[in-house]
Length: 99
Image 1 (cartoon, rainbow, N blue to C red):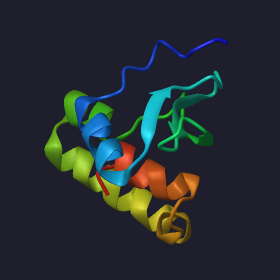
Image 2 (cartoon, rainbow, N blue to C red):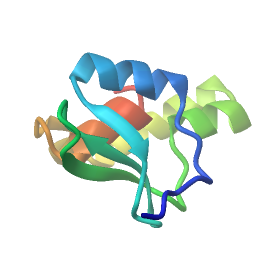
Image 3 (tube, one colour):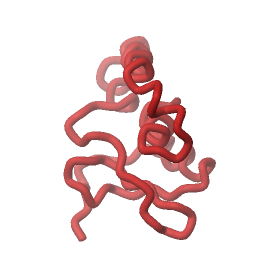
Image 4 (cartoon, rainbow, N blue to C red):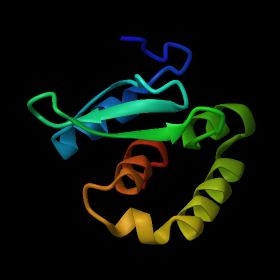
């Protein structure tokens, strides 16, 4: 198995994952950032396109105002996905965009 070690999962994401009742690990898919697993370690989905930024990256690079604007635009683009409980869009919103 090959893990995507280039992306560092934030502490915030681990805390939220625990609250959601899932586990997260670096993705096996080289095009994604995180694999989401259920409580028993069964694969649910991969989230976060590897070449794209997320809230944590925008926050560190550009500050809170810019990060909040990018999150607002993300939520507009993905509003259908975010609402489907258990979907990749739902987990991406919660774990990568502080949704």
